[in-house]
Image (cartoon, rainbow, N blue to C red; front, side, top):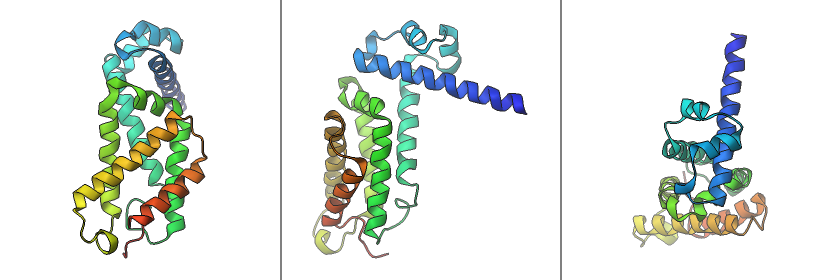
Length: 197
């Protein structure tokens, strides 16, 4: 059993090294020009090791995106804040802070994905996840009573993703706590995170 745990850790470390190498290269050059040889050299592994875990660089990109988006959702679900309606605004700010901490900790990934012309699909996936989370929270009574729900959700999600892009593109000029608190105040203004349960 001990050997399996060691092997699992080794596999995890190897995949992390491959992912880091890929993102380092992705930040410097166009995706189409990146080769498996370069990824292997940068990760300090051989080509066969890369192919052991990924079918090709397209599979690597897809799995990298999927993994980070899943972790992004998990980061903002840490204190169940996105699983149910929220009435406590400090809880909402804390949930958003966790999300911005995740963006900060994975700056290389998000800056690479959001700045590349070739990864518009990533932005669309991120926007879709954000819309789903906002749909669960938006109160369509009060200030939103006369709004079309889908228009309001699209507008709010686009504004949030655009704000994240701005924050990352400008090398995170404010702390995650500050960004979480600012986003929470903007969401509150549009009756998100303050609906009655």
